[in-house]
Length: 410
Image (cartoon, rainbow, N blue to C red):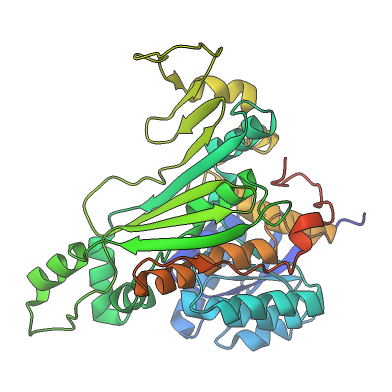
């Protein structure tokens, strides 16, 4: 395997999230930022200035991402634009032969998912959703514990995106923010991948298992509307009634029989949580109390008291994933507790070694499709909807996953 020493990157999008990624990339020696692009030149320049300040060189700046795709020295691109642009730019990048990494978000249609898959299959250009939560310390430790059988047979997983974003989303009414518009006009599980990504890896989705059906239900919509009404009143300002329910509950059934529950909750007061949980025939993990419970031995009688919870922390030393053992030895830090650094390292490792990415196009399409499928289900009174098989049957007998330092299959 020929390994590239450095990876020449083009960054497409220079919003706040993109500039956070740029800052993290300056801590990764193999990452060389060759160009930064944004529709607004001032924002692109802000991104380039980060590289100048922290790495000592000035990348090219442009406002048309096609200029980056046309550069022969660019090995890969990272797309951190608004949600609506992710898919179209990723397709163009794959067609240009550039390794493609893109930030998280759902899709607006199933056709978008199929377009991504078909482009990958025509070009064979690897494309990775940069789902950083797949590289969380506890998520990876739980993956290892599942593989080693501690939970027995997994029957159910749960997760959530629960984050009080009332002020941020309502502020977006002033500047036409795309995320605000999605919440304003759509009633759907808009942000499923932080929790669903790790769960999909736990359950071997697209490799021996797949999502079969989905149902979604929305509560009434009050949180955003109260904040907007208090600020703007009913007549003044850019106030419209938000469509999205305060709580979106999505249930997915898998081919092997497992169920998954996802909860989207960003418009009522609460602390941040991804609400992760794994339920198996021998044990359970719950993120909310950071605890696990394992049945020590089966007792054929009713146990009203049960066994006490154990701290998940106590299992980390034994079950920390090698990815995290290595990371902790380096004493590195980023804005999201290491997960931004690790997902970027995983992407760059694939580019350096010319291998498939650990989160592939079939993963991305399956996870992103939840948004539009949940929208369909809610609009039909929580009717079940069929989940497309983006692998076209290959999930039954996929080729072996590429093994590497940042693989998510073991």
